[in-house]
Amino acid sequence: MSPRPQPGRSYVLTLSCPDSAGLVHAVSGFLVRNSGNILQSQQFDDRLQDRFFMRVHFDVSDPDADLQTLRYRFGPVAEAHRISWTLHDASTPTRTLIMVSRFGHCLNDLLFRSRTGALNIEIPAIVSNHRDFEGLARTYGIPFHHIPVTKDTKPEAEARLLELVRELDIDLVVLARYMQILSDDLCKQLEGRAINIHHSFLPSFKGARPYEQAYARGVKLVGATAHYVTPDLDEGQIIEQDVVRVDHSLDPSELVTVGRDVEAQVLAHAVKWHSENRVMTDGNRTVVFR
Image (cartoon, rainbow, N blue to C red; front, side, top):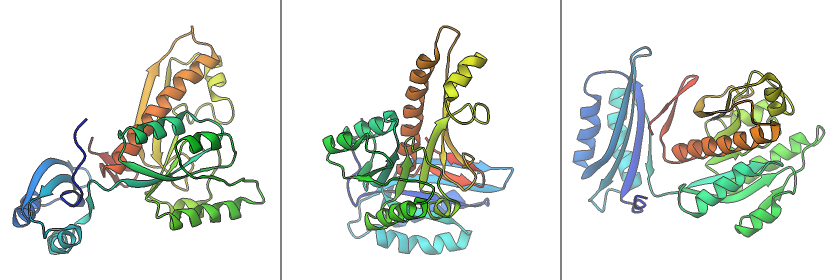
């Protein structure tokens, strides 16, 4: 595992803009003027949309070139090239609130990866509409918030969730098999900072017991999709997908086991890439600099 970035010395710049000559030169020139040393640079030129995307991980030797100073100095460069951009301290963990219902495989996986340093995230809270994983949260020393949801109490439950997001200064909300549909208003308020995971059978096998439906149809592939949350149910911008080949020898319970493994891995990848500022939305698609 590579060493963690040093606080206040390592930064990630992401940008998108109309494609034009001189963009890489403009960014590299900015870095040279600010004692920047490029650690990793990735770019993508979308020829169909005529847009340019770039992610640069760099460090600085000038002790006066802090985050706010760099943001101020990059402003004129961005304005000159009509650049939409973000600049973050690479060492700052993403404050992540995890939501879960009664399937804990994704939650458990994220907690373990966070504890071992595989994910640069900080988890100030776990929210659930059930109490099944209150004990698990306690073993990790993470506050557990039980917020029941019924048809009549859904507005109050979502208001409480948003209150936690604001109080805890949450950067990212992860629906780790949280089995409640979020309202359109909540989806809009969490736009670009909420990730969901589900099996990749959709639009087939909707509703309850999808693996039993898949078994009955004799599927040969089991997979998962991680995507951003939008008001269009399960149709947000896809961040990561994966599949595993299966055959007739697996019964429904074994298919569930395989599916849960894929879901946990796919969600972990999506959270990792988001927390490292590797994901950029491009309309209904994403550009992911792995």
